[in-house]
Length: 324
Image (cartoon, rainbow, N blue to C red; front, top):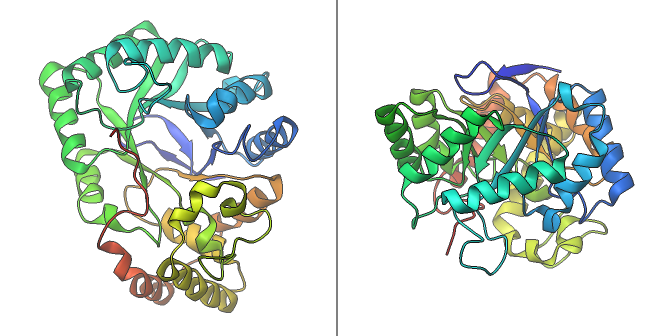
């Protein structure tokens, strides 16, 4: 496994990290445990979850399955998206974040998290309040590093400026949708992160599986695919993205690899990327994705991938999660 610094921090994370959105939803406990242990055996030390994944089941499963492995793991979780219907069950107020951190620690069966991330920007809470609450969490030892997610570039830059002004810990990372099917971060977020030393953690690196080449049309969901097991995912299916997946698949055949491996390898080579989150519903998927670490991309291949994905630099992001 290869390791990189998370932004400009001293924390080293595996180039491929494990995303656990499927735990407790599309993967039961035993399957999730197998996936987690396989990832650790492959050298993945970055495990990413959130307080709302599978209605808290993802954190609960990780807490149970991670016993005996915790000291080798960079454990990351998030809070900020709606947890319930209550007035204070969402956002990044001190009230909500402190409540959610304590609950996450209980479910994860640990007394600290290595990276605590704000799941999305909260327009109703002053950034000063959020950042001071995070500072207190770091000072208490319950959080080691802090990160953002789903922030626009200007929001992230504003947070960094406030942290510098007040002498608070900075965000060391940010999560964003980023893939060959979503190159919109390259317009503003990537340059900003390179300038400020913030590590990018892409989610949906395969556009939810579309870049694996498994989909042939927006109407058809292959057996066991995300669109079949999670009906809400169908909103991401469109002919343009599916056609991109087919082109990547054709190029991958020439290289003797899968479309997934080629797509992940391209993303790993992008500037500012610290670790790429890969999800799985079975361990065999991880076994395949690890091959992306050793795939060599020539200048010609990179140029061809850049050309066929150029239209995806413009328009709306493939995915972004915001408070309404």
